[in-house]
Length: 228
Image (cartoon, rainbow, N blue to C red):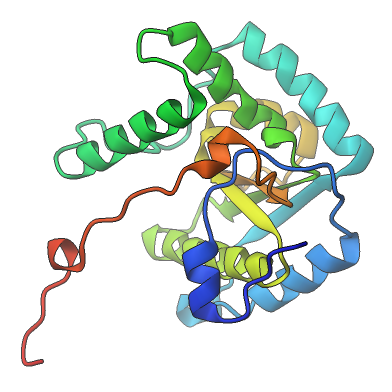
C-alpha cells in the first residue's frame, strides 16, 4: 500500500529525509508532471532560477558506478563552491545538527567511535540510498541569495507534491562536494552552479534509517508575536 498525502498538512507532516528506497520505479511521465506543477513555486520577479537535471535508468546506474570509484579516490570530495554550513556553527543550530546525527546513527546502530562505519554509511548518499531517480538543482552563478531562496521554495514544493503522489525524497547538499565529477557527467552549461542533489522514490518502510523522525524546536523557540 502506497502512503499518499491527501492534504498539504499531511504532506508536510509526512515529508522526511528518506535514506532507504525500494526498487519500485518512478515513471518519466510522473516526474515531468510534478516538476511542471512545482514550477508554480514563487520566485522574485518571476525569475524562476531553478535549472533541473533528472537521471534514471541506465544513466543512473552509470553515475552510481562513477561515484563508487570517485568516493574511494577522493573521500574528502573536491573543493566545494559554497559552504553547506557556516564555518562557525553556533548554538542552537550546532545542537540541532549534532542531535540529528546522534539520532540517525542510533537508529542505524553505528556507535560514535565507529568512524569507518559512519563514513561508509555517509557514502550511501552517492548511491542515492538505492532510489530509482536522482535530481540535481543548479542555479546561474550570476544569481544572488534571494534567488537561492527561490530554489528552496521550488524544491519544497516538489517534495510536497512527491508526498501527494506517494513518493519520498532526500535532499542532498553533500553533492556539492563532488560538483566537478557531476559536471563531467551531466555537462551543464558553464554558467550553472550545482546547489543540491535529491534522491526520489518509494520509501522502504522497514529500513532502520527510515524509522528516524527528526526533532523540531518548539514554536516559542523560533517565533515571536506582537499584537496577536
